[in-house]
Length: 271
Length: 262
Image: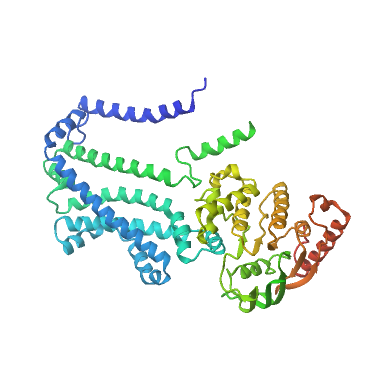
């Protein structure tokens, strides 16, 4: 019997999730693992109820920090690499500095940031912004470097001047790469926020997490992890939706499996 | 009337591995409305010459005139069709064809009119909203040509435009090129490796020799126009083709390469 490919895909995707869920319930319900290491679903619900009053404020603070840092960083990263792509002079002046900064692990700078900006929101936002701007800057510069010469030459022979080549060739060519980078930067900024809040924060989700850790409340920690993840996933899905719209012209075709795709093409040729 | 005039053009590419002298005191005049083909062994500078005329390369020395005025930069008066795919993948077929017209700040209504005309001319009107990735290689080449012609350049520079296409598509596009050329009366410089293609299309075939690149020989295929593809089978056509193959073989043997396969 041959099942519809979509049905098979769905079954194959669901089974591992169900198995993991079942394992979690069995391990916790039968007390095979201590709740300190792995709390049960019920523990999580209790922890959530207990923290509920503090959550809206903490979420608000963390998300606004992430958003602020992400916006500042992305805009700076994109704008600076666009300027470097447009002007040889700027590339000469700042290109090597960017190349030098690229491999520095941003997390390693946390102590310096605390030293420079003190404790509070400023160093945290600055850290997120820096992480995002590096990600965005590197991707944008790389995308600009990879533009096939032929498009620029074609545009010039069709009468486009320097500014037009930039706005009508460089910019549309790199937009899919930029959106991909935004997705990456958004994911990075959640991680950076957690790390930033671990370092001397008095509010926010990360701070709440530290408090839970001090009282050995594993379930509380996990609830916060889930909250972070939920927001990260929602943001990722949103950007992915924009990405699909912006990349209609590229040959990348989202969901299907790469090997499958070519096999199917070979099959259809026979038919 | 003289459209393009090349006087004592020299082109040397300087590099650490050694300088390459590609064009040596190259002289050539091209008349208005002429169809000129450049053939020759690879590395003879025929593509370089085309890029110099396009303004994409600056010659090391020499004068380069169009309508008596020096060519310094690329411009909309000289459109280029490349061997590789140069259709902008992020624009639909009609937006691609419209591209040059937009650079000229033509009004939307006029753009529409010109674009539709060329869409019909290359038989892609029904696919005008498609993205290039949805088209075959031959269709993309048509878009490429329509984009170049729609911009109403005085000179068309075509650098082995059909080199990547299969024989049937290639022949169809040759026929279309001649048709559009007859309709618009443009001056065309056409680089090719395919001697049959050169004889079929050209008023004049410039045979290049290499190291350094200069004119070896000139042929005039004087077949009556409009030309049907059937002339490719005629004895006169084959005689000229044989002659050209022999010349090419001499040029290639001089370079110590294999014989010409065309």
